[in-house]
Amino acid sequence: MSVTTPPALDLRTAAFGYGGRVVVEHLTFDVPAGQVVAVVGPNGSGKSTFVKGVLGLADHLAGDFCVFGQAPGTRATRRRIGYVPQRHTLSASVRATVREIVETGRLAHRPWYRPAGADDRAGVEAALAQVGLSDHINAEVSDLSGGQQRRVLIARALAGRPDMLIMDEPTAGVDVASQDVLAEVLHRLSGEGTTMLIVTHELSALRGILDRIVEIAQGRTTFDGTPAQWADQEHTRILATAAHDGHCGPADEQRAAYASGPWDCVELPTNAPEAAAGRRA
Ligand SMILES: Nc1ncnc2c1ncn2[C@@H]1O[C@H](COP(=O)(O)OP(=O)(O)OP(=O)(O)O)[C@@H](O)[C@H]1O
Image 1 (spheres, rainbow, N blue to C red):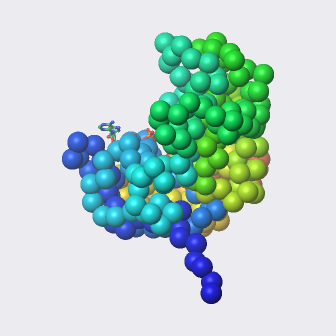
Image 2: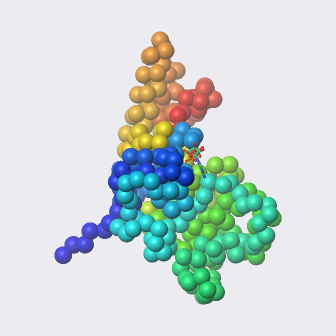
Image 3: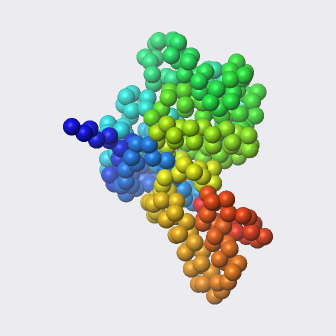
């Protein structure tokens, strides 16, 4: 008898928001286990609210959703999800060591009254090794650079060995070294079958592992498809805009190719700033 694996996430007309105000709604899609999904869209469209809703950090206001086939918000589902929040760095007022911060990623794995055990310590050390910060385990987080602090938050999310990793703009504002570390981590996790939901404005960071793009605009899903379908749509959109504006020449073709193909290492054209400005998300 075959056993069907439930999707990592299953949303049915779900709506999320704050204090009774709906920010994002009519979300109906599922994310099969192991899929890598980028959540894109304009600023303020509700991307963070969507992922926070899944995590129980924003209000669930309508519809239904399940996490790995189970009701959300339980300890059993929480321990299966790792989360890297959008905030770029930890506050300078946080007086804690790297070990202490990363260890909070293990809290869903033991009763609150039980001190960290050997499993917790091993989880913390393995997570720090993955992000290249083993040597900083006893450092004060406030003494680290912004990029290193982001890596600490990624290690915290990895410390619980999650089945699903949710990251909110993990590459925004971090140095190249930290971006490289993150790309390496994501490739390895993707190879291991970890489901990933990544809010991002930088699809190029997900080159080679991205299965799907979900766009949210003005609180609704406006696109859900493969990177290739997204590229086609961007290409068509830019050329249609150029045609609407009364011109559509080789420069527009070049701009459309650049804007729609960030994961294909498309060469930056000479009008790169203009092309970059043409990118939507
Ligand atoms: N904690 C909160 N309480 C009330 N409203 C909020 C809260 N957080 C966000 N909002 C509002 O929800 C709306 C959507 O914000 P959200 O952060 O989800 O958008 P986003 O698509 O992630 O934007 P960005 O790309 O800029 O991060 C905005 O109007 C914002 O002001």
